[in-house]
Amino acid sequence: MKKLACLFLFSICFVGFGQTSEELPLFYKRKPGIMRFYTGLHAPTEITPSKFDRFNTDIFYNSWTGELNDVKTHFYSLGHNINMMFDIPFSKTSRFGLAIGLGYSHFSVRHDGAFSFIDDPDLLKDEMYSSFANYTGDKRWVNRTAFNLVELPFEFRIRSLKERGKWKFYPGFKLSFMVDSYSKWRIENQEFKAFNFPDLNRLHYGPSLRLGRDNIFLFGYYDMTYLFTNENSNKLQLFAAGISIGWF
Image (cartoon, one colour):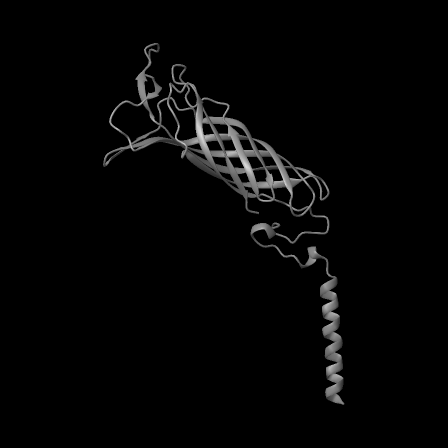
């Protein structure tokens, strides 16, 4: 009898625990974590809106537009960037929200041109400007110009409410500071690298756009500023087009 009584009490406790666990709402059972389940330092509440695309990576074709002097960019000219964004939905049932964050971009333009630096004859002080034209010397089997930027990205976010197959439209704007630039080329077994340009423009800004479904986007960016500050330098502006992945 004692064994039967103990078994009966154990069964009641087990069933009761199982029912309580099944009846708990999802937002009570879901704990803070990483990747797409990450919700912050605390578990979400019943009215907490879902958040998306807070860590993003972009792979893109990059080049420049403007005074190119017939210089061509190769099709394998690729750059990348990463950013961390604070996703701010307007409400749990709203299709709209904002995002702001911090990012890093690497532009690497592979081309068949060359830069030269020329003294500006119109100024009293020693100042040089950057000239860009076709390269006519010994064959370069590596020839690229790279720019590294730290960025403050901002996006206005529009997305559908369904959980899967979620369409997303993220027009945005980026403010960037160029921390580094260089040109690199190789002739036979010799490698050359030149750092920074004499009239490099450090401050950059321009519109961006991400359009996609779930975690995969088409990505685009256009720099509204010139690469160089001297009025005699080639007027060049960067742009990028590729794909973006929103990890969580």
